[in-house]
Length: 176
View 1 (cartoon, rainbow, N blue to C red):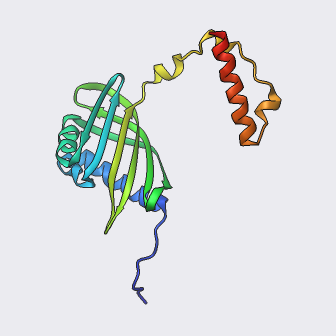
View 2 (cartoon, rainbow, N blue to C red; view 1 turned 60 degrees about the horizontal axis):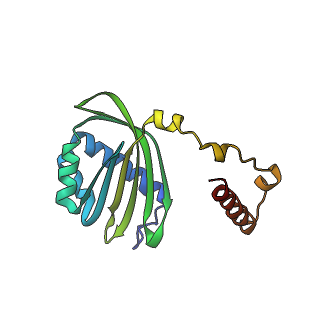
View 3 (cartoon, rainbow, N blue to C red; view 1 turned 90 degrees about the vertical axis):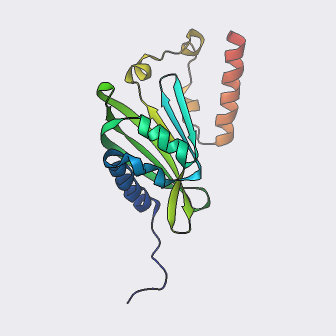
């Protein structure tokens, strides 16, 4: 017997369905990807030191069309229930673009806001991941010299950890 109300769906189900539909359309029919957004939406694309922002459906359409993706591979997708019935979706993968040889790895985070029928993308942050930057970050000398006692690392109390962080920051300021 059919029920009068649809069965509730989990954030994981929403996210999985969204990721499948979104990236299939992005790869095969990018002209229509703006339909996942609304005029209240914001998109941010980060590539190294370059940041591009688009708001509303027309600007988002123009930005997406400028990306020239020729292939997309999704590695992971994770979803979490969020504020006011929304769903936070984080995706990692790689893309092929017309103007770049090889693949570029990315992380993309969406906030799917509820609407009358389903969800729309309210916020979208797409960030190319540069593996060399991840591996080459070094702490300043004054941070490398700080030794954290193992007893502090085992603390479970949030207040004690916050106090330790404040003391650590005060010591860093003294060193500089």
